[in-house]
Image 1 (cartoon, rainbow, N blue to C red):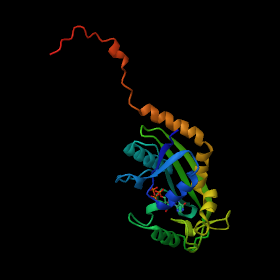
Image 2 (cartoon, rainbow, N blue to C red):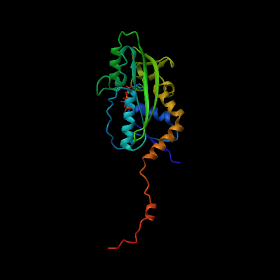
Image 3 (cartoon, rainbow, N blue to C red):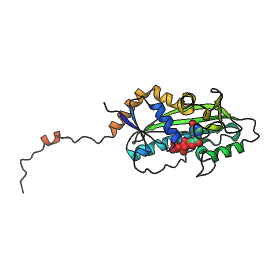
Image 4 (cartoon, rainbow, N blue to C red):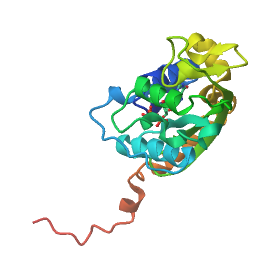
Amino acid sequence: MQNIVLVLATRNKGKVLEFQEMLKGYPVEIRCLNDFGPIPEVEEDGETFDDNAYKKALFTAKVLGLPAISDDSGLVVEALGGEPGVHSARYAGPACNDQANIDKLLAAMKGETNRRAAFHCVVSIAVPSGPALTYEGQCHGVITEEVQGAGGFGYDPVFFCPELGKTFAQASMEEKNRISHRGKALQEVGAEFDKILVWLKARMAEMKPAKPDHTQFEHNDWSQEKMV
Ligand code: ITT
């Protein structure tokens, strides 16, 4: 039986690697946005991780006519009133990079004793007609005083994970995926993947145009028709 196609609706290379690692082995054909022609970027203007995750997955699903999986994730820092939160990707400005975000975060946390933080992740699986499934994960940790480690992406070098005894940037991908926010959300996806596949196939089948109904021709009365 042909595997169903699922598009990873993300432009973040670090996420693509983590998604691919975590979804390998499931009976689904994973595609990335790069496998298709140019696709416009979706504006992430939602107020919650949930809003943005759904918006990204639905946008991609509609544009490509295929089921899509996205995540919206970010770092919620207690002493900063929850910031950068949904603004994590562009915390230091619209065209910033990971280093600029980290520099801004460390500056904002300078001298702060409460360094508790958590990564949040909402995964959304959407079909082009609108319905979606949602999964969540969180991972608690502490913001370091300085960068530690060179792996991972985003805020990994300043996120110390007590469970691992090191920052996410010092952890292997397997170690991070086992306990990370995205890892936890995707473990839930994995736990009910059979049900998800049935759901996806049913939703996609509903969208298929109705087959032409040839039976009607049997009832047509052609006897009065004249050839011209
Ligand atoms: P897409 O929207 O294309 O998926 P993005 O990087 O813009 O990519 P988000 O809007 O979800 O993704 O922003 C998430 C940001 O939060 C991300 O850019 C990182 O700065 C941070 N982040 C999320 N998960 C992270 C992780 O596992 N490790 C480090 N930083 C992470």
